[in-house]
Length: 130
Image (tube, rainbow, N blue to C red; front, side, top):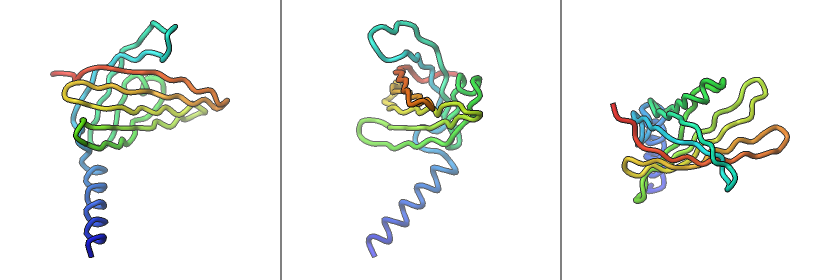
């Protein structure tokens, strides 16, 4: 009986997150994205918006990716999240994952090319106000 109750509450939480979003839903973030590694000094600015269970990443939209569902889970150290943007027209999938703690956000972006090449970027930023 106990496992049935756990299963029920897990299903309710999943349904709630897919319909209403997760713990970071309704937030927007300004981040700086930089290719990982010592010899990469340039960076770009990006805006992440978590709304109604979907992540909208402005620069990825401009590059032809659509908004996608995100996963988020809260714990004592903040909220971990991940989102995978699948590429259309042969574009490589882009995976964003990170952690939100208070008004700060940080994480990694992984781009996996069809040729097996993997590009890794890191990002940090803060909650957008206004």
